[in-house]
Length: 256
Image 1 (tube, rainbow, N blue to C red):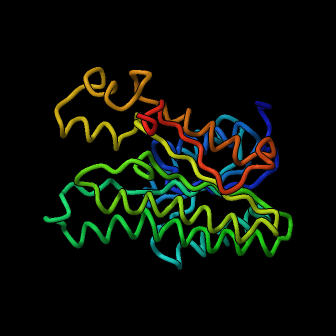
Image 2 (cartoon, rainbow, N blue to C red; image 1 turned 60 degrees about the vertical axis):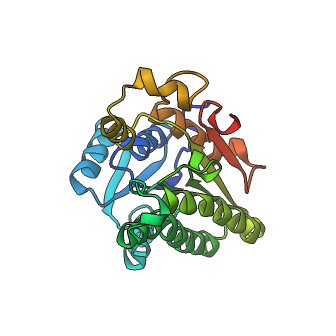
């Protein structure tokens, strides 16, 4: 890819303090974008900004809880206030999956997952799309789903439901906004080496070597940057005729 395929674009990345979000923010800055690093983790988020600026990029941190409309509205407004517009948004923020079978569901835990992983994406779409429509110059939005958007997992009822719904939201947003030249797509990561995955491995007391073959035909976990590369392509003009689609970054797991 052209190393500057997002030159002068303004991009919001939610959940950008760690893992896939941080990798995406750094990669987008390398590609020439001016990046808004959004997260509830202020310390880690500001560290990502420092990394980007230290490497010669342009970025700032905005604290945002994507499950709260006021925060998401303020996030988009901050991007426009600082950089003048919004061209790209990566809706990546999510919380850890629930861990109980439905017959033992914890209602508070269910509400927490749905609030962030589903409602959060819907709120981001609402305010991002409204801004792009006002600008009248199109845009690209990428929602981060999961292999769980396509393959159910036991004890993850809320997470599976939310991630399935993210794909539905992506398709509806694509249909509604093609006339505005706004493209909306999704990326569905599989087993990616993030703090969330490492925490799950620790809880199960298994190693990557033991567990990776069950989740990947490549027998390894993916790197956050490999997900970021898919988002970069969808965010750029290289994918100018792609909307309403999902790219699987899961080493073939969804096809097993």
